[in-house]
Image (cartoon, rainbow, N blue to C red; front, side):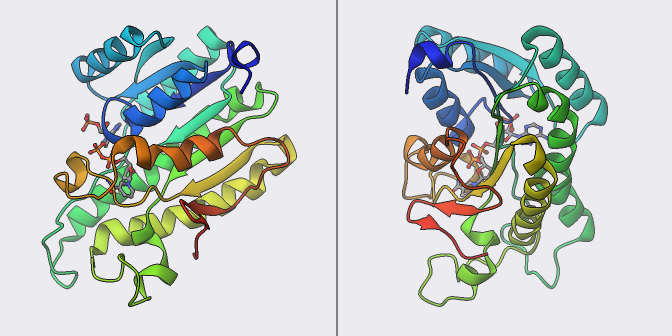
Length: 246
Ligand SMILES: NC(=O)c1ccc[n+]([C@@H]2O[C@H](COP(=O)([O-])OP(=O)(O)OC[C@H]3O[C@@H](n4cnc5c(N)ncnc54)[C@H](OP(=O)(O)O)[C@@H]3O)[C@@H](O)[C@H]2O)c1
C-alpha cells in the first residue's frame, strides 16, 4: 500500500481501545491511515491513543458509546467537521453477557443489552456516519461478526463454533450479518462497500483470553476487507479461509 496515497485517509474503529479493535487500529495506522480511535471511556481511550502515537501512528481519541444516540451523533459531527470525510468505518465494539446462562433461561433484559451494542450499535453508528462516508472517494464499512453468528457453522458438528450455544451473543451476530447485507445494498449506489468478517477465536478480555489467535492475527481479516479496492466484494461474510457460510 502506498503510504503517501493513504496519508490523508481516515479510519474510525469503535471499541478501538483494546483487543481486536486496538489491533485493527495498529494495523491501519501502520499503513498510514489517520485514526479516530473510538472509545466509550476517556481514560481507556487516551491510554490506547498514547500507545498508538508512541508507535508513530497518527491517532486521535473519539469518545463514542455505541448505545447512546447523543454520543454517536456528536462523534459523527466531530469527524465530519475535523476530517471532512471518513474512508473506513470498523464497527468493532461488541459484548457478550451470560456466557454461562442456558438459552432457555437467559433473561430478555440481558439479550436486549447485548443487542443494544452488537446490533443496534452497528445500525446507529453506521447510519450516523453515512454523511462522512459519502464524502470519501471509496469508503469501506467493516462489521466484526463472528463464526458464532454463522448458522452454517454452528450447525456443522465439525466446526469449532458448533458447541458454544450463547443465545444473546450468537443471535446478535447472526442479526448483524443481515444488517450488513441490507446496508451493502443501500450503500452500493455510493460505491461504499460493506462486509462482515469473523476474526477467528481470539484471546481477548471478551472470552477471558481463551482464544487461540492473538489480536493481531484476528485483526488481519478486518484490515484486509477495510482496504479492498474498488473491484472488491460487498455484502459478504469473510474469515481467514475466505468466504464464510451465513
Ligand atoms: N475475541 C474473539 O474470539 C472474537 C471472536 C469473534 C468476534 N469477536 C468480536 O470482536 C469484537 C471485539 O471484541 P474483542 O474480542 O476484542 O473484545 P474486547 O477486548 O472485550 O473489546 C471490546 C471493545 O468493545 C468496546 N465496547 C463495549 N461496549 C461498548 C459500547 N457500548 N460503546 C463503545 N464501545 C464499547 C470495549 O470498550 P471498553 O474497554 O470500554 O469495555 C472494547 O473496546 C466484538 O465485536 C466481538 O464480538 C471477538
